[in-house]
Image 1 (spheres, rainbow, N blue to C red):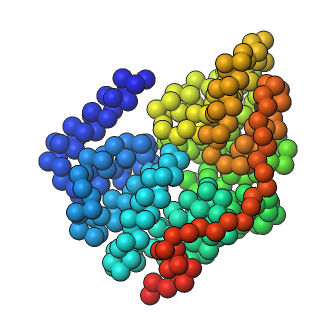
Image 2 (image 1 turned 90 degrees about the horizontal axis):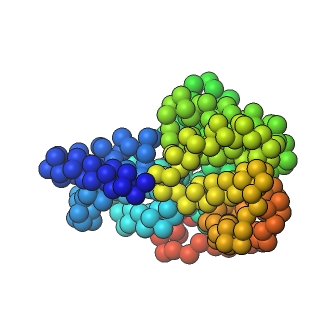
Image 3 (image 1 turned 90 degrees about the vertical axis):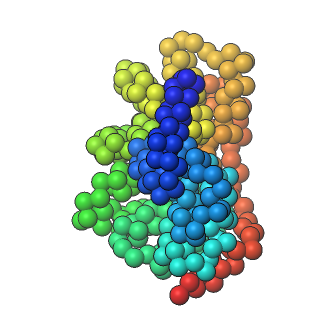
Length: 335
């Protein structure tokens, strides 16, 4: 697997060299990879030396692509670095033209880092500057995720219902798949296993149709989780190989950690109890899971059966995000 990653990295580097390290060409190529494999987008971006020396529009575009690649790969440090860099160019017309995308990425970062009120502030401001229904749909999905993380399931469902109607009208399959996958996770939160399975199956089918790798991984892992809860080992065996292959070359520690837990439970159902070494590895992997909701699901459905003592996440504590540039987000005035 390391050899495969090396070959991919070298191949992308040679592609960059073949274009004579033309920044615009590299940015175009990195953007093209976002849907198929955002990890490759990062590799391509790193072929541009000293992006801070680029003109403002290319500098901001470099960081916008890095933000979009950081979200599905769950690289929050990189996401924050790019956000901070971008906010140094607030007066740039290109910054203002992309304010919706920038604030949307900020909202995702703040949600994943448990700054829920600040996440809502950022998403509300982003929505103010949204220019089309697709942007509004994406923001509505993010707002629903914030509500879910805070346990406001009724609010989240209302937001998803509104988004789903619009996505169906506009025939936006990627957005529908995202909504179905997130609704499936909410169903799992509430113990509605059959409903979760139905939604995850539909999300996986949609992601396969549009060939979105991060979506196939997310919906695939969620469906594997349901199969283990229902102890449907044949279904698990059919899906685990393609999902594992995709996850292995996708630098998302949370997804890889979840697969570790799932495979341990699968082996247990086949009669192989985890030894102490594996239990320790699972405890470490538990801390890599990207959200409190996911940890709560693993705690509820897997940890007890595997006899692994991990702590249930505590209730979210209100905390405020501190950054000098965040005051501008609170004011939300980029006219």
